[in-house]
Image (cartoon, rainbow, N blue to C red; front, side, top):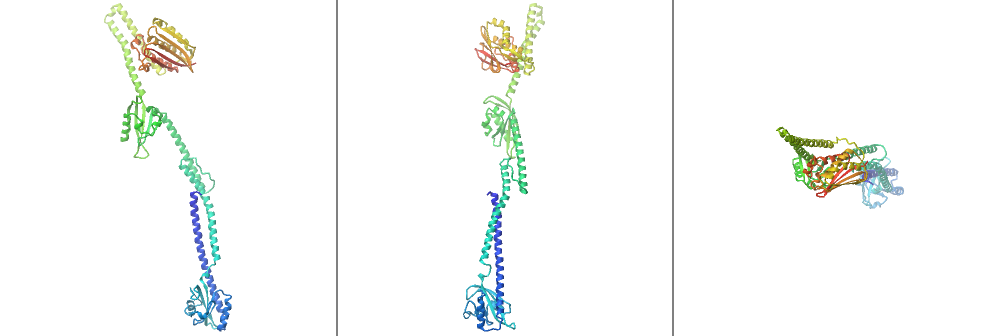
Length: 584
């Protein structure tokens, strides 16, 4: 039996038991009084009948004694005949001579005083029993009082019988037993729907919003169950909406390029997104639950967070990380109100601007390099022009020499400007690419034919091997790429050096490798070879007529054709460029 049903059963059953017992006691008292009154009335009537039967003129004591002895067989009560002076003439249970004068007995006094009857209750001196006495007058033919007849009965015999009392007890017991069964069935019928509703409410409090009240019925309990189902459905819908919103928010936060971290009042990390994991170079498991001092290895960052905790005001600053690698982040710390007004949580937003700062430096270097590269031809043009204007053009030989230099520097200036413009268009993907299936090996052969003369002059050993491979590419741009890479190998490889070119396929890509045994590139410089205006050997590159933009243009051309380029080199041993282009 469940708790609610037990409580209801206990209350209703206790009320019924108390009511039944009270009713039984009340009924017992009423029956007792009713039976006693009836018996006392019957005792009085019997005394009156007996007194009337003694109304005959026979006044002889022996006659009266004989008559009363005869009546004693028909009357169970004690019979006493008392004369007016109080002497007892007859007593059905005691010898009259042993009895004292009854003149002062209460019931006798009442009759002597003219009452139609007299009664009293007392312990009999002769029988030592508590008796109920009823006395009535015996009158003569002229209505004169001639004697008194008294009947008495033990008080214990007046009232309801033991059989009736037992029957009453049996009735009370059966009523209590019946009430037990009926109360159990009734409380079970009433409590079961309430318990079902309570079970649903308990499940809802445990966040099980799929719980429903399934009992069918009518009345208020059914209406309560339907209301509980409506509540559960609304809670389930709201919970699903919250879960979906939370999932959307988490996906949004995890896809932000900005690192997000949430700190609680205890300065512990409660949430981070993927961008924050990348910035801190730590997995979420080593961040969440830790204090920000344990998670962030930057004094500037820790100092900024601590200041926001103290001032409760937003802060913004550019912070440098030196471990585990150098990084620059734009940090925004925003305080937010927690669940209680006196507590403050923090949102830490970190935007990795390392690449931006690097690009700013590259842009600054580019401007400086462009200025430097333009200064040389412009200075030459200006200097030789001024010399000619100052009179040198009168000398024909000098004039031709200076004009030749001016023309050469003009070509160089034009080449530099064209390379800068082309690189800019490639970066913005504004250079049209005529992609088509082309034979990469044939393009290599065509390019090698163009560099035979300079190769012979340096006595270079140029080797080519590989299978016939079709790629999806712009043939003119492929020639430009090959020309740049092979010319670089010629420039940076000493005389009688070796250049090896190999074409192969790997998976869904064609692989072109160009290897030389030239001067090589140091480890410090190898990551910068694709930067604009960067030269390994500045003097040798300038003498070759290069602008320092060739490899940058090559990199962007290959990327615009969905390919990639990598470089490996050892200083003094040579360099290998590897180009990968999608197969046709």
